[in-house]
Image (tube, rainbow, N blue to C red; front, side):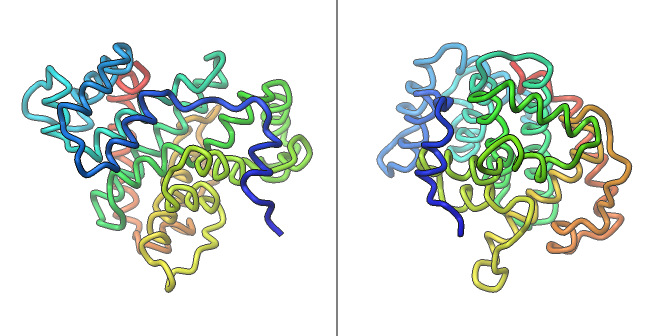
Length: 283
């Protein structure tokens, strides 16, 4: 039986904190009385975050016809849901005590999956594009948390994966009491994220969601599953590309009906978007 999320959070110990500005933005976006002015004022309280948000907004990933110079413009042009995505993406790097090679790979894995999710959702209409972006961004939040709270064991586990001692899901049981999927879901619950994002983190690898009972959630998680596999195939956030990943038979791709041509086209788009925009997201 799966333990309750609070028990999982308690087991982590040293937990990264969601930046205060990001929390306030999420709360404001849930308030029907919030305005573009109040949102921009909140982001402006963190000048470094505000600068990264504007930098990402002006990247080719959002394909704006003119440069966005102020936060007010960014909110009006991009919309509130996209602002949330930008704030969370800009905040992700700060959820690390250090930022060495391993942290950079975890960050690239998260951003790469988020980009893949948004492109897939936009191109094929399988999910809301901004929700898919955030779901992809946080699918491996549990790994970030594990590395934050116990970097020695996490790095030893990753090295064991590289040494061919087993896959991540198997080796997690050796080094940690809970899987990264369960840890990520528990932390998102603690941070008061939506149930869709919590379930996406929990089931991004197994897709154990009833497609008939909640088809929208199933499609969202399938999109995250496929985008994650594509990152693995391309070597985004990995030590090297994995030619053994069969994207045509990926569970997520099959679930949302992506054929070989659609996969090939999306693969090219993801490579282009990640290559062109990685530095914008890194800040």
